[in-house]
Length: 219
Image (tube, rainbow, N blue to C red):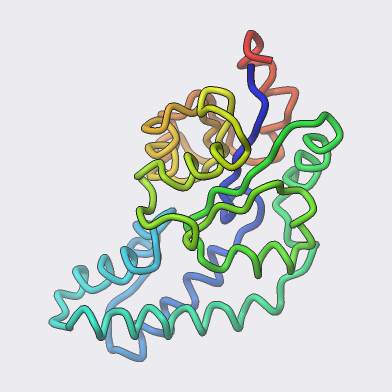
């Protein structure tokens, strides 16, 4: 039986993607590197350090690991400063309604995000009240597509992976959910999350009723 839900943060609960893009873009511009929306799409769902490596490789830049860490930290400083503008109005349509309903129906809920800034984002959204467990980039060493952050969330909830549904908007996130033995809900286009157990274009469509209808024998 499904007893818990685990949510990615960016692209599922809220959309900080544009803030991430602008922060990476500023860093790249300052370095004289090429960075555009196409490269940015490759960063979806992956960690900060994996992202800076992708950008370095795209530019064939000769730069030390130590310098890459410094640049990733600088990008994070730019991004975190921009989070101050977020507020509860920045939930994606349907996300807060779903979180409210899960609370009312007694499901356990965890966050499973690659972000190391998840607590700040949740505070800005006034969303911490919806989560029993916060699993993020500070909780595990291996980022998606490794299933570690989802396994962390399930363990802390006291549940087995097969008792949890994972909501994800990134290919790496669905890969992680499947690798961990979780049920998966993909949010976004088919070419990105079509390998999820069930897929919706937006969170507004991914209601508890719709998910229950798909996994009807597990509720």
